Image (cartoon, rainbow, N blue to C red):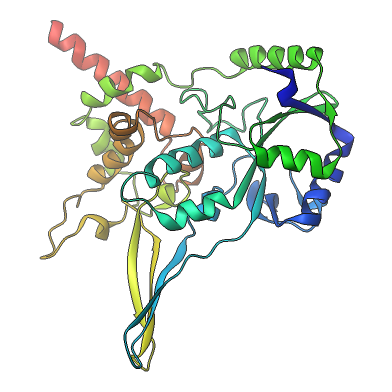
Length: 355
């Protein structure tokens, strides 16, 4: 930790900072919506912002990959005219938790791969991320420590960490540095501030436990042994195939492409919308053949997409431990409980081989 990369903001000035951001940019931040629900939305005043919040209903992914996105518009009145469409705007995301930053990093990895997602990459360049570190668990659904998303690493422009009566702020990009200069509210950090930050991180090692009875490095082996586990059949009896879990996931990026033509049949648009592997039509092909007709196969696919397939391709776990899937599941399927059940069944199978 280099002290010159850090600044100090007194906690009493946090509203001044947010209002200063609003004065020169569009700002989205977590806002309380009642009934323990929060959402990222555009704010007009610092008074709207909730600094203490559990993960929002929909992750900030929605600003990078909108739920509905126009890809192109076409016109056939005279000659065929096709215009690619990319909607973007300059935006500052304030108060993003480390689990959601981890989700954005996962999307960056996938959508920068070939074939590149041009719309996503253009919007990404115009979004500034100001993170807010969690000093304690959001609630009982979180599993951020297990996947290593509870400590800030990369993927942000500024990171705010609360330390008593002040925030220590890590500057991680030129965009972050520009914000520090524009707002004129920060003081240079000193060595004792860095020591307090290190002490907090050491304290977090005790607070944030490994929420699942295994280590992340054993996940590939666990899932290699669990393809035919009875756990999937048990989930089939509970899962409603509503798609809530994928709709709120920070790392799900599947979509469907549709086209609509106006009543004149002379113009229209092609657009994409979020889609879910938990819905029955997702794996259907021509002729009505469905490669994942059973809910057990769809649930298994979801877990393998988070904890196995992407490890081979990108070297990353694609679960961020935010807990949204468990929090929103109408059937009360809990991600940590499913992993624990897989571990117990896997251990039983190993012992049987030795007997």
